[in-house]
Length: 402
Image 1 (cartoon, rainbow, N blue to C red):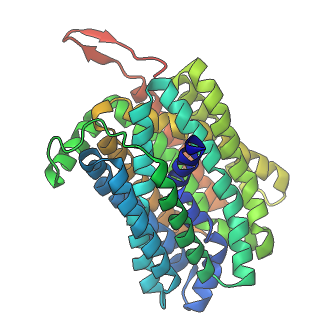
Image 2: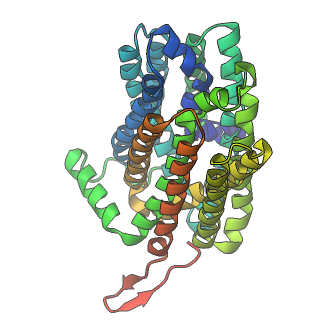
Image 3: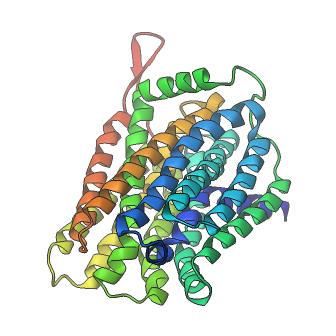
């Protein structure tokens, strides 16, 4: 029973960002309408959250290396609860932007520490397998959250979505009681901005880390481009009523879930790098298909949905392998490496989200083009991820399957 609670809580920690975005997606137009704002203003509630996620990971990751995973993630979860209630009490769009920024800062504690905990306990392909299993289970959240958010909007109002997030955080706090500390070195080394910058510099100078970073960041950026506009194009392009939003959204999310669960089986046979190559290739093909289809008005919706499914299927393969591949390079500082990976991933994705919202023109053409560009950039990380590394001066080896 304890192991099940621990697993469910780890899934919840990984899902902080997903539930805090997907649950409120159907409510963005209602928030915009209540505050007399524009669609771009509504999109900024997502980008400010992603910015908070990015910066927060640089804070919580190193802190968890020094003070331990448990006390830091508990503080982060309490802050997530409080900031969720602040969002529910927002009285203007400006207040909402600030509240979402603070919510993102606190929500960063979940995924950055969850990745570090997985790396503490497992290595190599096994770590990627466990992360894929967690991601696959976590995908149930975006699979269900938009539908729940849509019905909360219909039956209550948009503020109820943020009250629900506070309740979610309270349940996580209860689940954390089953955890045991996993950080390898507590209160060793230094804490402060200088060590954080040193870790950042060390990570980005590592070619293999940079390769994994590019793959993971490109995949996540494509997701954020989709999330930034989906609540608008579902109505603008497909004339979809609010109550059906979640069901349509679930088609693409199912692709991610299937990809993550298949990844958990495939990675132990193919290794991290080959599975990563499979994921990035699938994403590129799916993104190309939906981008071409979006430029023709008579493209069947089932074809667009199929291409979107394939694109997210590839993201499901990519995400766990990119993150665990990067963290495997720094086993003694998994929290800090996770922070660098998450900060870069989230900050770039936030910028891509702003760009997607700015260029959205009521059609699918702009957003699918941005998603295709992201998928293409992700392919550039593969050669770096497989880069040769020096061993004992002059000899070289190639790390495959890790």
